[in-house]
Image 1 (cartoon, rainbow, N blue to C red):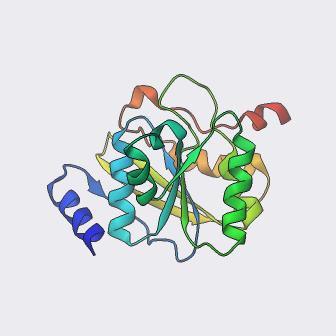
Image 2: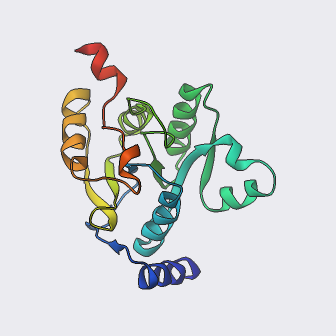
Image 3: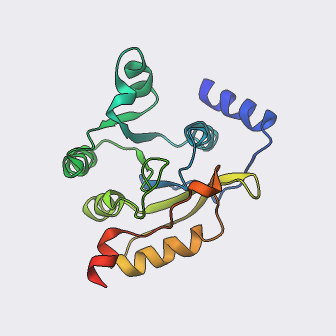
Length: 191
């Protein structure tokens, strides 16, 4: 109740507009992209609270140190040790298989900095758990944010990423200059 009221206040006073397809009706891997600002976190909370989606999200482990730890966990955070990304995937898969029900927010373009590829963990998690993927977005050019389509992955990286690239083609992020094109390193290796 408090979350929904907070989200309603956010959207009432924000210059941004929530534009969303219907919320997914089952647990999903929710992609948050382009991830170019710390404001993306506030948007993610406002979107999921407004739509009533129970989420967990992956965040760098340094966000969970000290006094922030309990707050971040209460907001659905799962700390990630970036030195062992494969372990993160297996931990999330195990949570889903044990019956925990949630949408998993992932920012596959990683940190807001200079790099050329998205991280592929979202793809592996979705395939291993059977969860669909929901495309979340932030677009400064239109001052809109929200959720796009939810769909099942095919298992073919090129096909899946082509669909994702098509959706994000006109989404600029909060800081457009920091946007990373949706491309996995694995696509380049198989080409």
